[in-house]
Length: 81
Image (tube, rainbow, N blue to C red):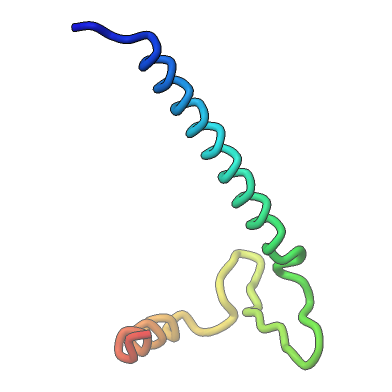
């Protein structure tokens, strides 16, 4: 089997060009992703929007009854949302 050095050089050139273009495209997509991401994801909303949150106690448990969770889970499965 004869391997041509010219053909091997062409394949190496193609592979290097492919890797460089792939890395450049990855960086462009990463820059666009960073640019589109909101700066303050959990900040106060502006305008007439209302920020909704669930109050929690120190131990992390909800202030609601413990029996409410199974009812909410059943409603979740029943509605299919």
